Length: 315
Image (cartoon, rainbow, N blue to C red; front, side):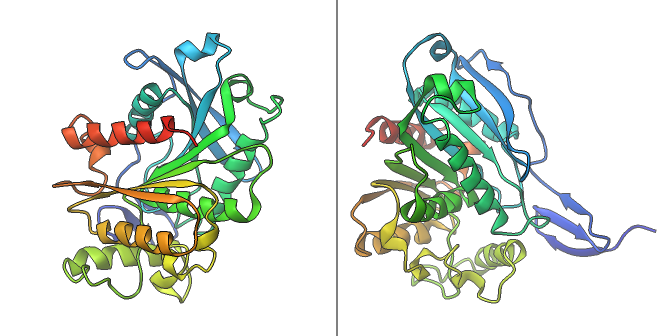
């Protein structure tokens, strides 16, 4: 007899009563390789066998034979903390292009996912990855690509959706306990996965979409606070003014149900006493994560250009 379903999350997840988890999207993977189109080389490695944290590293092929040190981009993939991975073709292809355009070394973090590993596991894994990057500051870390090619005085954090949420939470933690040996001048949050128990004035439409976001959160984070948890509602976090970077780029999309939270985050952050500079880039006519699924459209090209210029502006 077929195992009964315990619960489902539309288009994302099915959990059976026997504990089996079936992911309904983002399960495809591709191996690391030399991408001939962009000239970017990638490889996979285990960051911490004890916690099962892994990553895919990307380096422009031309840099492998050069003494030049490049900025580092630490990237966190999206997917509601449930779907996709660092090995997903969606993210692999996007990182190849971003690395080539920005001329950076990238570390795409493969954190453990809910519901098998509910939050804060993904945050803990991501912090382990950041500390692992910092361990290369003296040039004698475990990964030669970082020892030889990384400029750890220019480490940028970036991610989309749930990954952008991770970027925020890593930035909060950097403000409290920055690993020795790295400088993080900037963070990029694309369509950040933020929410609150009470809707903002402009969030009165699309109740079904808002409900789906809230239900997703309640699956990945087992608390009674709901969406006023500071992990998803930064306005509830008294540590916001201590955000551990100098610049933040928040990218939103006009049709995205999360759009107003991105603008609200910018306003609250700017008024918190934080000494940095935050800016918002809007994408008219676009929806959530459009740049990943239609990377050659004009809006996606403009977003890529903005991210690249943000990185190249450095400190």
